[in-house]
Image 1 (tube, rainbow, N blue to C red):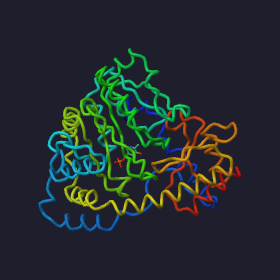
Image 2 (cartoon, rainbow, N blue to C red; image 1 turned 180 degrees about the vertical axis):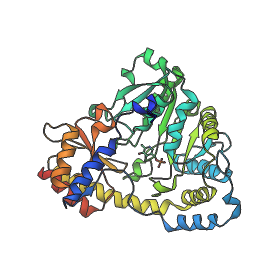
Image 3 (cartoon, protein in one colour; image 1 turned 180 degrees about the horizontal axis):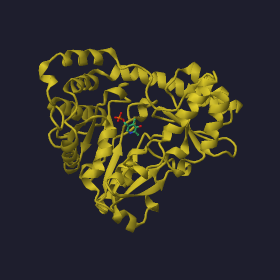
Image 4 (tube, rainbow, N blue to C red; image 1 turned 90 degrees about the vertical axis):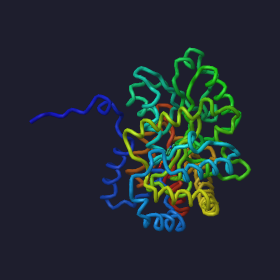
Amino acid sequence: MPNFELAERVASLPPYLFAAIDKAKSEVASQGIDIISLGIGDPDMPTPDFIIDALYEAAKKPANHQYPSYVGMMRFREAVAAWYAERFGVQGLDPKTEVITLIGSKEGIGHFPWAFINPGDMALVCSPCYPVYATAVRFAGGTVEYLPLLDENDFLPDLDAIDEATWKRAKMIFVNYPGNPTAATANLDFYSKLIAKAKATDTIVVSDLAYSEIYYDAAQKPPSILEVPGAKDVAIEFHSLSKTYNMTGWRMAMAVGNAQLVQGLGKIKENVDSGAFNAIQEAGIAAMEKGEPYVEKARAIYKERRDVTCEALAAAGIEHRVPEASVFVWAKVPGKKSSAEFVTDLLKTTGVVVTPGSGFGSSGEGYFRISLTVDTERLKEAVSRISQL
Ligand SMILES: *Cc1c(COP(=O)(O)O)cnc(C)c1O
């Protein structure tokens, strides 16, 4: 029998974060313990009906049954440019050259390094962070240097602590605000400084803005990095309809920004996929054009969940910051346990599933992440169980 060993790039991957938890979860569930899952950041609310209706109408058009365009429908890209102008005041994004449709932003983020990383090139990645950035860089043959996100720096990378030589070696830097898993936000001062450093050292800036619309205070809407004048010289930003409109299953997203960067990503995609289903893009246009009242309702629901959770955590003496955006609360593991021990003990004794901070990078050790993707009653119950551990 031949033995088909996995390629080195796959064999060397760290164990998949959720796989071990899933195994423990089914063991606990089989003992009849009531499981409350605050583990995965997948919105629990359904996609608004008007978006489903738009899909249904679009799916009936035979023209939409054929191969879509690689870069996405012009009308979708125009809707993205219009949405960026309306929401962020980012005017003049050229839908032809500075916008591309993605099959979910994970797809785009996963493919982007293939376009710009040569074997041996280095990328700066925050820790803790969404695991796809580092894996994508490594798949393309690059190496990763981590920037710790610390409480004392508001979970932003300390840009001044990166020495000149490192900036010069870095081919790209990834940032994600509002952040998964830290729920931290960045302001325009941070982005301006980042853009200035990147410009001075020819570094590509990759911004992941997946959670920009889940904010809790309309006076403090999370900005886009493209609001910084001149950001388009060095930046590409990934955005997604997934979290904004409860459309994670639909796989609909976009990248916008520097034309060379957007088109470089397009070159990779031309060779590995054939674009997103046109009918879903039509539904996506409807979402961006008419979705705001629905997002407003979702925000109110998340805000209530955040408040209930943070009040209960505070009462239980569990340290955390009250997030201004995202669907997460990032909290400190009480006592002296490691993140993994805490999460495993919590699951086994209370049935509550949270995500260990260390699973997002070594600087996440000592923390755990709560997803606000169950209703307030269950969140209250979960925190009360956490406090009894
Ligand atoms: C959910 C998520 C994404 C991916 O969203 P898609 O569904 O692939 O568009 C990207 N970045 C972060 C940080 C996320 O949490």
